[in-house]
Length: 156
Image (cartoon, rainbow, N blue to C red; front, side):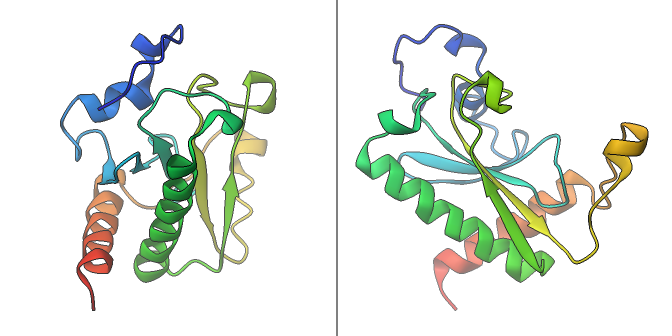
């Protein structure tokens, strides 16, 4: 499903390779839209950390087509609603890191991070012990959030 733009490094891009693999559960893809998809982050900052990713290999926000921008926001709202239903966070951080110097791990393929937050979850472990503490298994989180997205899309 990934569209070719001729960008170097696209062959190694996980955001192009994951949907092309055809194993959504194995690749942690929760939902596919027309131009973008929602997936769990394999290395989450917090439980339920999602990413909303365009199928097209593109690294710059300003190069997105209007329909891609719209669907990125629509899927962000869908992901937030699924997280609210399943994990009941107190808030969210949404972020886009554009370029390597801005912290983008995959600078050639832009994506939106959705990080659910709870009161007191400052999670000092990465600072003090270079360790992440994640209380829920990714497969369990995948199952719960996938079901929640399906429920939202099929109605009440």
